[in-house]
Length: 234
Image (cartoon, rainbow, N blue to C red):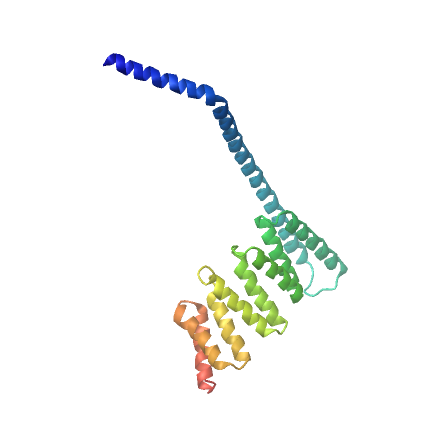
């Protein structure tokens, strides 16, 4: 019995040794590939972290420069120094957008372009930047904020129908993770009031009051409902 066990063990060791001998090079190659893959992942992760840090510093420095230097000029100033500074900053933002489109810095640069144009009341250019951000980075927390800003730009341009469409996009796509949905609903009610579609306006005001009781916009919505009913609009 003991001799049989020894023979079986010897056979196994012989078979295993034969397997290693015939497959040894392949196993060694697979091991080398695995090690190289792990090293590659580690290097790639380190490079990516470095790029994120570098690009984030760039956009933050640019924001600081904009906030500090633009404060020296009056709103709507025609000072050529302001125009030159704005051109320099916008050019730097375009560079960041081109180089770091896959990173947060690229998103932030697009948003900052929109803010600059909006501040300068160049609403057509502002909405281009905001729209580009919302379309390209749909999962970013800046996406619904950008859509909201697009709607505001259209309102400033007198295109209320387009503004309505963008407020609806916010509600359709970000109702579960955007905290300013009550404001979007209230804005829809307000815009439908301007179109004298008072029943539709009431519907949106009611949505705010019914779904977002704790929101500050609920008070405004209830006031508008009272006003419209008191004025005999509905």
